[in-house]
Amino acid sequence: MELETFAPHSKIFDISSESNDACGRNAVRSRDPKTNAVVCTCKTGYTNTGTGSNIVCTGMMVSHGIKKIRPHPYISDSCTVRNGACDRNAVCSHDAKTNAVVCTCKTGYTNTGSGSNMVCRDSCAVNNGGCDANAVCSHDAKTNAVVCTCKTGYTNTGSGSNVVCTGMAI
Image (cartoon, rainbow, N blue to C red):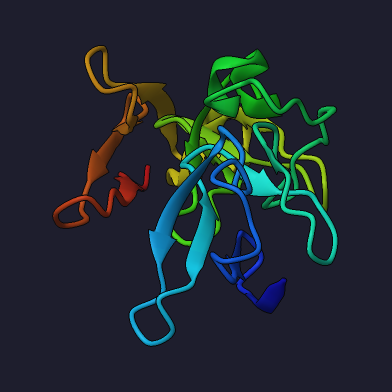
């Protein structure tokens, strides 16, 4: 007998009426401290795609505007399959609370997509990487971070990471 459903990835069972396999192999069993009922929580990399009292922990998830991949109950980490459907220039990770896929553009890339379509483009190709109009945008060889360098005839009059290229009036 199901006592209560809470959170999108968990459910509580009355242990007297449920077998030991009630949670499935992609979920972790624990006990509710107040009722001592069995709580099924999907493992990291899984989310509950079941409905009502039927918990089904699957390994492919959708979050933060990424494309949906068909769920599969036997994949332990959806980021290992096609980078979780994230852009090739993105890092795939999981939300700490929901286990949903989170796509984050790598250093040197900017999300130019919208809605359900994340597109990570070279940051220098998007508004000159945020560099001054009189600067050249490039990437640090080790970190791939954007580097702004003033063009010939211009001097950086900014401070810190704020590059402001000022030319000499002739």
